[in-house]
Length: 333
Image 1 (cartoon, rainbow, N blue to C red):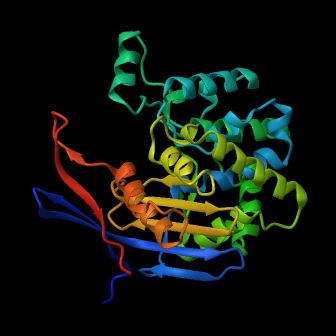
Image 2: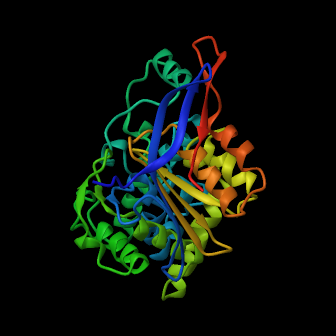
Image 3: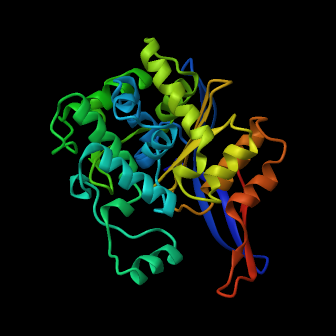
């Protein structure tokens, strides 16, 4: 049996090969053509949080964002898998205040900030786990805002049949060219529905989102506003000094991206109408951004792909902070 994955990165410690990461990468254009593929582009899997820029379309398109007085920072946070850093937590809490809701309205479960320093600060201040700290709380605030605006119940927005979920799937259906409600479905880590689709379909949808290739001006405008928010506030999507922010800034905003759990990342190149989908087979977060950076070099989107890949992955260090190994991208030619 032929495996659908190809070697993409290797881990070396003391110059000795220690681990390998295999995966799939697909590049497509807004016309629905697969331009390049490594591994099986028909492989079906869950993009997870890489879908957030698509889930946020209805928030803007319906006028819900404007009615709630949301800024570009809020729109970026609606697309985020944030680390619950101070500025992100303040935005989520302020957003809930705007809606007249408490964190109990969020379906995502209680969590702690990503960094140990932020966790320690929570404990020192007498705090505890909170739904606000969950990395998906911005997305959930977006669904709550949309629900209130369209007159739907804020309870049950995690139900696939909820009007807010149907609006998301309607927009996504246009971008993939088929009924997204019929795609295989599971449950995401934050409690919302998670859909699975072929890697090539995700890359094509990303290309159409990048090109805002949709039928109505209202949806085109919504997508472009989300692009502007991500371009302007890339750190909101993950955290300060994150790989996402580094890549957006290194490409002067011509490349946008959104990572997902289990080794997934999606890229958008608005000026060229290109979409990129990457999946590491073992679900590791390690190496996926390095692979993504290397792909940008292959596509001529950066002249410093090697340096960028090293910047976003970094060295492997021991508990004293000393370099002891390296992550090297081995994407086939």
